[in-house]
Image (tube, rainbow, N blue to C red; front, side, top):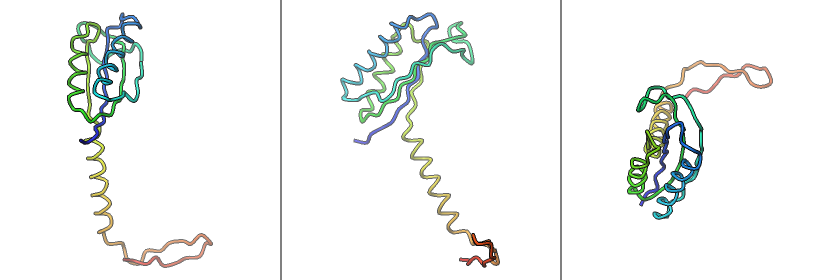
Length: 138
């Protein structure tokens, strides 16, 4: 089965104690461990102002997690656990490997198009020694 890369961001209520945030993180890590997946990175971004109100709140405690897994069901399980956690007011999961594949495909397409473009005849370049040289056109 193919390995997938996910980013998970969740926002807790701003008055959530640090111990409760750590408990949510450990719950998610435990769920990942059950599927033989290790969470690669966890960052606590702290209390930040949100772009818009969520449940009448203007601030939230942000947490970022990055994980790599071969189990698609794991993400559904993590989202289910976030949905039932009382301090969590919002969460977002993004699958990155599809976007990275799309970017690589676009880059390869651009390179193929650039290789097919005719180069301008009669172009000149300057050699490092300062003398003029005719650049070969293809």
